[in-house]
Length: 476
Image 1 (cartoon, rainbow, N blue to C red):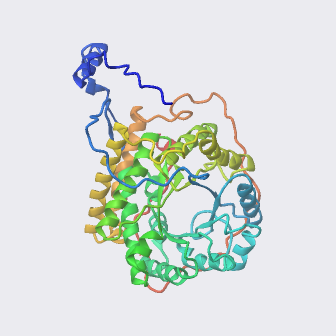
Image 2: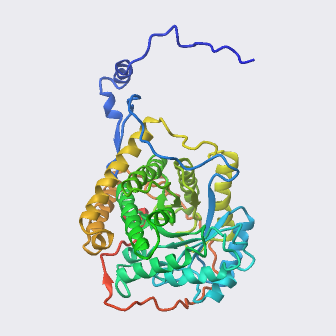
Image 3: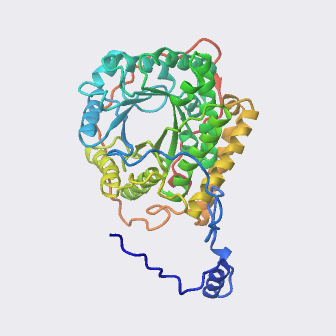
């Protein structure tokens, strides 16, 4: 029999905002309650109190409550094929649910793979039906997609993530061997050809992490995600897929960092903006979000403090409703992670999931004034910036003309000013710096030279101002 409710507050008069402000101003010795508000380097304002009568933004949250509420995804990037294979097997045996294989392509590091046979060798002993495989292949994506399809030919029902994303590679490198439009068309054609073969696969990754890593603000990152998703959807429909197929097979890629308030709101704002975009296109589609821990927040001066940053990022991604979470290792800023560092990255997510029970509720911050307000502000600002990108001719034109790069440069300057003024602090770098160096080990297994095929396509090379990655500690 249920116990009767006890009305504990019925003998007290209802409190008002004016009552609260009077008490605060008394404590602050006459200063206004609004003085407790803060503005971050990204321009987002956080107030001390929010109006409970405001309607929360409406979107469909990520499904939660199952045994595995999100996909614990590991990313392997060691150039040695043998070492990368060992890492994949260890990570999957140690609790990871899926793996991203970063392939050496153009600039940057990655596994030295240049053929379908080599990728098949890398994925030996991996049950692709049970442990899905994703790719990070840059401008090599179209060729690598065929390699992955060949490696998974015995598993047509595997939920592969081809992660075709030529626009991020173009933005990061600032150049492209051949017209970027041709790379976009080639990727879409491959996706359209493979779609009937792999009906459960996702094909494009509309990512804004390149903006984040270069110092961009959250709304800028979200705007690029929307613009990339629209560009990829247009390419896929021209290649023969329906608009519904194009939207349903596109993953949204976002970064999460050590600021849980903003990171949680950013993921929620992505779902809100995606709901608006797909609704405007006449094909309402649920968002599929892959959240990756920020690389720019990692420090080399005191790498041990990165463990706390990564834990905060993982918590934010889970609470914010990411479908897949990729947590880097605390030594990623120094080199390839050791087995110990990768184990910590896996176990952080396992603890958040199995002991912290962060996946038990679909949207745990719903109704929180600060989260609802930040979600609404970010979605509104991102939508305005997205429209500006489209007015400039779409993301390709906005990258070429420097529209995105100029905004990111301005945001990066704001981060630098905030660090100089002490408004943004980095433990171990700007504050509480260790008196002696405490080195952390990295995997020093010899690498291998990349044997990737040429990614050049016919036509003149494309160029744009590069969105070069930064570390916050270098801006301090």
